[in-house]
Length: 234
Image (cartoon, rainbow, N blue to C red; front, side):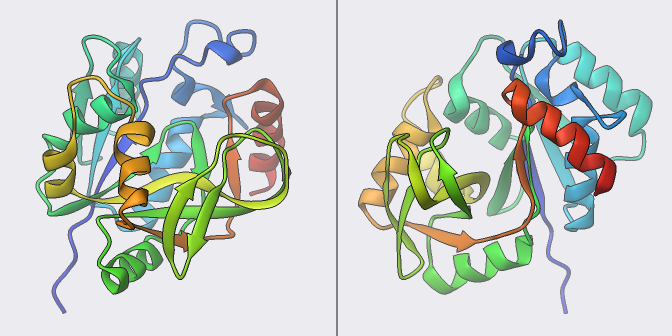
């Protein structure tokens, strides 16, 4: 069987303004969690998922991330994509996608750990012939995240943030067709969620993969502290 070549973009350009009290003057992806930079857990996860090449989408303080990779991951196969100005999530993905050589690629957030089997995303992506496939996390009693409407493996709508007893959230891991992104990216600077995901859902072009693995987003102090406790045990 021919080996599948996997590429992944890691969105790691965030400064982490809400974490300034915890990790001043540091990119959010390098915030120390249980004694290691959070980015190291993301890299290890991608390697465990058989990702061959990682493209790091960087912005503010990119030098610190580059230095960390050079010093600590000398044998890692990776490429650096640097925004000269903030481009939004869509612009960052589009810029980094210039380094992608495959027909499709994964996108993960550098401040979120979601234990997803990428084989499952690829399977549903192929079955539904979607242009984008999202990893969806079932969650209870939440208001920090927007929710997703899923019908027969197809995402039909993205709801705004509101308190919910139970729902599905966008877990921040995508499988994306490169040609589709190239055709529909509206500008250099744009929101991936607003300009790509929402219109694509309206045309039933996004599939959803339910994944109930461990999930943490370190973007706020409470969850950052929780991650520090959780990763001591994981």
